Picture 1 (cartoon, rainbow, N blue to C red):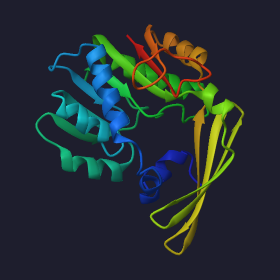
Picture 2: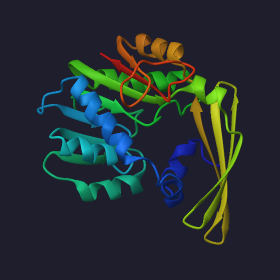
Picture 3: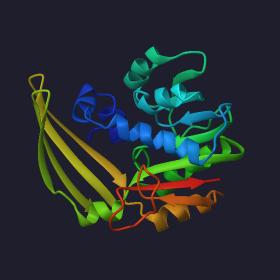
Picture 4: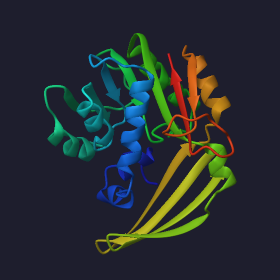
Length: 241
């Protein structure tokens, strides 16, 4: 990758959204309904969705009656999300490594949107910002892939055709990271991007949270909020205060 931060380029391209266009909105909405009910969040709750992408979780949370702010580094995603704004739904370009101007009742970090950085200190900085951006008694909801299951079932090579684009995908786990190498030909040009997220299992993520002063209150293994099992669960979902 030419740039220091792989996600700055990749998340801002139209191809990222083409590859992942089949993301399941029903799953996302089920999770948002379940977690807000489980936490018994009153409708006065102000939720920060960070990073929010094009805003699919934010829009749905807002439809449930919550005040929502969505922040994301990808300017193109925020441009799209801004079309959905209303009095109680706002979107802004925000880098998670920067502190927040406001304090929120809850911060949601969804769909494996963490662990992008080589240095642990950068991940810890993000968690510190989130901790400081929460009001007293506020909740942090963390939704990540289940690294242990990914390792057990690693699909090393895959080809996906979406909207006439053939994406060649290779996956590997090395040096404490899960890598996904994506190459494809589109718009008369060959493209290559690499996604990289830290191998964060329950133990490591819990230690990160504790280090910045969070206490983990709940651990779930899927969007139905069932118990977490390191071998079989699809997700690693943590609630912290």
